[in-house]
Image (cartoon, rainbow, N blue to C red; front, side, top):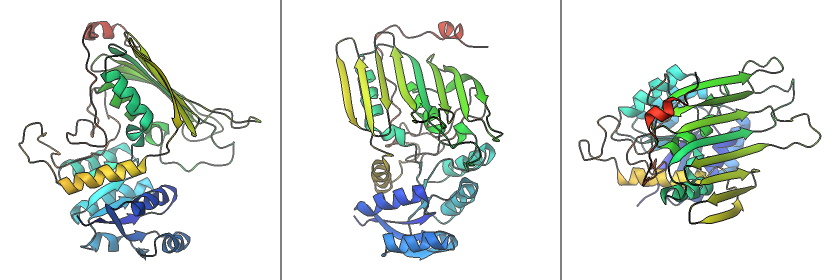
Length: 361
């Protein structure tokens, strides 16, 4: 099968990561690279001499030989680029977030759910070795009934006065990875949530945020994310972990961005695994997305295919807009990158009534 021709828009940090992995893959051919920065275009010519390098993104959308686009510019341009991509018949790989505010994100989701074209967002934790190891352990019934999901990611941010150009509040930028992975483990939708946050040094958005609540299936969660963690200390450190607690056992992971440690304490097995952290797993995402395009969309009306968004192989994901709302992109059948499996439980399911007593007012 011929490689899929893709055009990239934006060659910043993430665009560079994607370019590297796409060029390594036999499934992809980088046909064009667009960036408004002359320096980035010069870098593109050096890294990918075979690609057409341009300053006007419209040339990417107008090229009938380009089958997919990678959207790696800033979020305020992404919704319009998604719209142009679908209008020109191109599949979409997008960085998160998929727009600069929630309203525009829901518009982008609606576009994605009403096209037979494929789209994906780089929520890379789903493809990590450590989370898949833990999920497989849960699926074996080793921790019993899944009860509590705890996710924490606290790192040193920039020092006061250095500035921080990010694409929205904490959970709208990198924090959405932790919101997403909690939901992936739960195999359910968010039901209730409460949050608290701290602003520091006159920054517009909070640099520390904690959210806790419940899923519809009764699982409890808490998620902590912050950039307030000793950025002025003599020796910087950070605190990142996932703690999955069941009725019989637990599974947890910690990492330092170089090495990940997974500890599994089940009813019949105990393991401690130490492996390289593994980065952003872009190679896995690109491989799975190419396979979705090659396979083609499922037939509408086929068993197990949802009425809307049936053509989506890997779907766009954004935060829920109201309590009890279904965050789009979760139940997309045929999602090879996500595989939102609900772990099988043999006994003692948590009852919603019992969970209600733990809901925090």
